[in-house]
Image 1: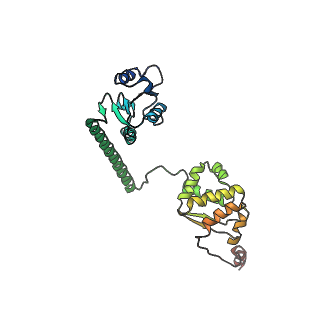
Image 2: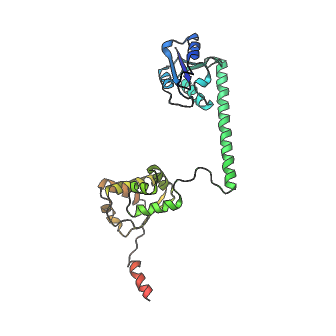
Image 3: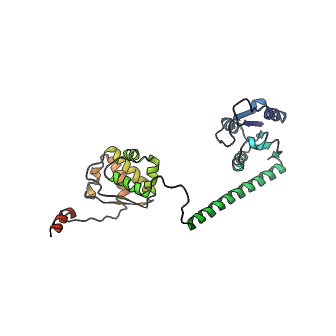
Length: 272
């Protein structure tokens, strides 16, 4: 069975699929098996294309008037045709006379695949060369971080003081996903003077999300005046407490200090 696909970029009256329709019908495509879109070829979510791909079955052949009607870039076009071939669906382009059921069409498809791979290799080479040149000039590649080191320190201080992530995001104008990703990327996350006030349910969930993202990916240093055996009480929800402490305590190095607080000793030292 032949399955036809047509596309024009504009939804106005200036562009129509009449020429494509006539060519596909002349090639033997049944009018009931024609699918069309009025959208850019760069879009992968074209509804007409999606329906045509879903309709095609093993042994069928998808037919287009020109290659650029199916996809505007070579990698995108090859991705669609490769997907069809894996399902046992042939592909034919009338203008370029490409037909994957013939040796000539198979050869053209192989050449296109080699060209796409060559294009990807050249792109990767240019990117690596650009990054190496930037590194020699003392510049780092990629986008600048949305949360810089100074802001991150302030955010961690706010979290240590008991602020929720929602409040921190509002205060510092950061997206929640960006905040979580930034905390997860930090090599060392310090939660200073944790406690002694019990956590609210929202704070407990925030803490679990932070330690979950960093589990086996980064280090967490926690300082607290509250003994470790009382941390369970500090997290108000038992299920969250089990999950948090399971990730924090079992594989942790514990250093316990005892003695008078340095805050008490400081006035005496100053007086001396």
